[in-house]
Length: 252
Image (cartoon, rainbow, N blue to C red; front, side):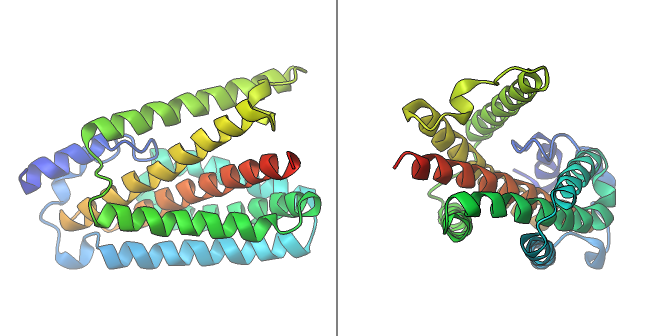
């Protein structure tokens, strides 16, 4: 595949966060090197987002305030949607997103930790262990993000999101929601294992976009957007691992 062909296919990345936001970036092919996306730049920005997330998570962990947690969740959701549709502002929105998600994650982790002592460190360890493992699998070619792979992951991810929105809608109107999503039985645990697997495999799509985008010189703002997308996936993965561990612990 030529450089120009590669650039034109980035808009069909499997990760829903990327969507079709890059097909108009052909005009940036001749940018100076200093204005192009790099792997090191994206890694550094990912580190900044993680540091912000951990910092605000520590605040909400030590200040149990549901209003603070809810604000973090709401602000994070709004900024995520905004950034997905306007990736050029990711340098501004991504750090605020990471900080707000930290407030939410710290708060919800406190609730789980109160019920299942030790679950927080287990969830954090499994999340970053999964990140490291999949990065190794991607770099060694054990997992290759082919077109069929992308199609499978984006289809499964979209299906999960639709299911979650239906569940929220049912609960909003006074129902009990979709039972197996919350169940700690075999079906509920199996569903959570499946969702954790799909969330984890989205990391491969993030790695692929960041690497290919860096090699083909996408504009500099894509460093922040790539870091933001990786952060979205990590937040989702952490929450799903937390839910899975809670189901397993409550079954003992």
